[in-house]
Length: 312
Ligand SMILES: [Zn+2]
Image (tube, rainbow, N blue to C red; front, side):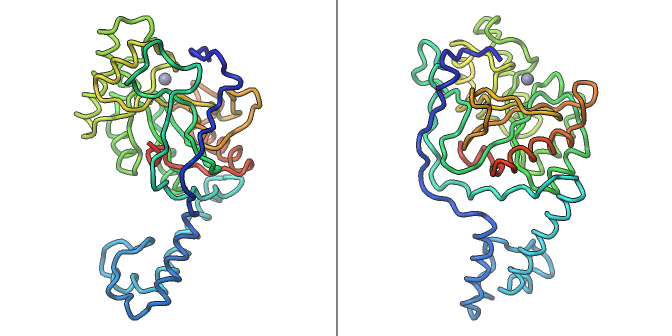
C-alpha cells in the first residue's frame, strides 16, 4: 500500500473524542424501563427509542411492557441471525452516534502541498470508543446473500462505488441503499489518479458524483481515490464537486486474513477497515466468508462496528 505517508508507522492521530456515548441496547432498555415508571403517560407517548413499526398493533406495542418485549424480540432475532450466518460470536453493539461530530484532520504525512480548504484525508476517526468502521469498495461482486446477511445481522457499512463495475446491476446497489447503506464515490473507471491531469481527474470524480445522484438520488460527500492514491489535483477536483471527506483505511480484510497498516498490527478506536465487493474468482471465499472473518477479528478484540456517517 504505497500512499503519500512518510511517517506511516507512528502517525496515528489520537485526537480525543467529544462526549461519552451510551450503549445502544442499554439505552433501549433504559428507555423501556423509564416509560414503565410513568405508565399513565405511556399512551400519549407514541415515539420512543425502540418504537414499533406503524401498523394495526402500533398502539398496543407502544405500551411500556411491549417496548421491552420488542427490544428483547429484536435481540433474539439478532442472536438467531448470528447462529444462522455462522458467526463465531454475536457482534458487539456500537456506541450511540456522537452528539457532536468529531473534528477530523488530515493524517500526519498524508497532506498535499497546499492543503488549505481541501477535504481531510484520514485513516481513523478521532474517538476513544472501541468502535471501527467497515468500508467496502469497487462493486464487482453482487451477492444477494451478502445483502441478506448484513440486514439480518444489522451490521453497518459504507460503500465506495466505481461505476464501470456497478453499472450492469444498479438495482443491487439500490437495494443496499434502501437497507440504509450510504453509496459513496470511488470514481467512474477506477484509474490511478496521480497519472491523470486535473481535468481528467475531475471527469472521473465529478462524473461519478453526477452518476450516483442520477441513479440513486443522492449526491455523495465522501470520496475514496482508487488504490488510496491521490495528489493535490485529486483533492482539488474532489472539493470542486462537493466532496467533504476522503477516508482511507488502517486495515484491509480478506476472507482469510486482516492486513494492518500500523506497525503494531492491531485495531485501534475509530479505525477504518477496507474490504471489497469480491467473490471466489478474486479471493479465497465469498462475501459472507469475509464478513465472518472481519467480525471474528474485531469482536475478539472487543470492538463494535459503527456507522461511519454518524461521525462525518
Ligand atoms: Zn478500488
